[in-house]
Amino acid sequence: MAEPRTTDGKGTAPRGAAETGSLLRDHDFRMLFAGAVVSKVGTHIGYIALPLVAIEALDASPGQVGLLGMLSTAAFLLIGLPAGAWVDRMRYRHVMIVTDLARTALLAFVPVAAWLDVLTIEQLYAVVLLSGCATVLFDVAAQSCLPQLVGRDRLIQANAQLNGWDAALQVGGRGGGGFLVAALTAPVAVLANALGFLWSALCLTRIRAPQEKPPRDRRKSLAAEVAEGVRFVFGHAVLRPVALAGAVTNLSVFTITTMIPVLFRDELHLPVWTIGVFLSVGGVGVFLGAFAARRTGEWLGAGRVPWIFGLSTAPFALAVPFVLDRGVWLWVAAGCWLLVTFRMGVDNVLMVSFRQRVTPDALLGRMNATMRFLFTGALAIGAGLAAVIGEYASVRAALWTGAVTLSVAWLPVFFSPLRTMRELPSQ
Image 1 (tube, rainbow, N blue to C red):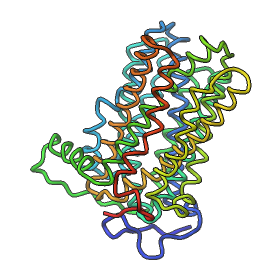
Image 2 (cartoon, rainbow, N blue to C red):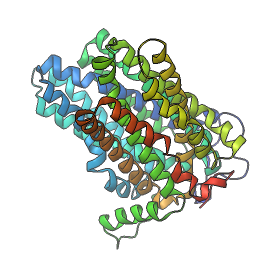
Image 3 (cartoon, rainbow, N blue to C red):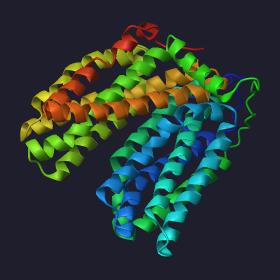
Image 4 (tube, rainbow, N blue to C red):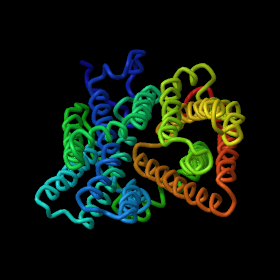
């Protein structure tokens, strides 16, 4: 097993750390990887199992189920920015372990209360909101601890592993969650979800590398620390275009995917399974792109890839609403969507690596929290934009809006210092 990795205080591994072998041979990364993957599996199971608990055990109305879904993501907007400041005050790994244990306790309450026949919809609302807050803190801490654990010279490789499996879980995780619910009932699936978070916490406790408590200027208030993180992101020549490109991409994709089910059912009159297949194609594209990111970055240059791939896939983004129809054209559109999401998978790995590489350790939590806040807000705006355009213009108009904005999402990177960089930027 690999020895624990120490850093030089800036999250850079010592000389010789940038091995060419798989990072999964490294004990500490393997434990972080296992914890993060199991945590994501639990999250995807929860997307299916918790609404079904509300429907089956509580006879919840459509409005109540919708509110439950909203609360599952509301935490990113409610505590997204202060979460970064809180995380920067603590040891990242400790935050991840505590939030895993908190989600274990919260979710274990649901099946126990259901079996005792004391569960209420208000309790389920509270569980979903609080576990969502724990997920925010976990995700921010996970992205922030990575540079310290593997060194900034291996960030692309580490992010390719994490993002690739995250994309794979988006394809199969919810389907697996549905199978688990069908086989074991919704309360038992939620209990399995809770045990998954417990397993994640145990994996994280086995990481050997020491982590010192980050220094803190006690003269600064929480608001001042949050503002410092926001200023850092929008004042940085690399982070600002990465933030803008990511936000535009999220807005565009959610505008498209929000209208896909409406188009398939109401206009094309296609069976429900075709919706799942089409959206799963996007997950496959992200998965393949994540694992291709390292090679393409070495071939074309890490800073050049986002705009080169963005420009070359723009025609395919525009083709999606144009060719999306019944018969063979449906699969032509799916092929175009695969290429577009492949580019997104490459971008996910490289842009997260850019962010981690240029951010000092003391600001990693706040930088990641600011990015997550922007990206989650863009998802909400994209869904709202789709609803307004789809209602007052047409579903096709909403799809065209998403496709056009997606086709130009690479422009902030093109008009930035990243445009000509072959290597990852440094602090």
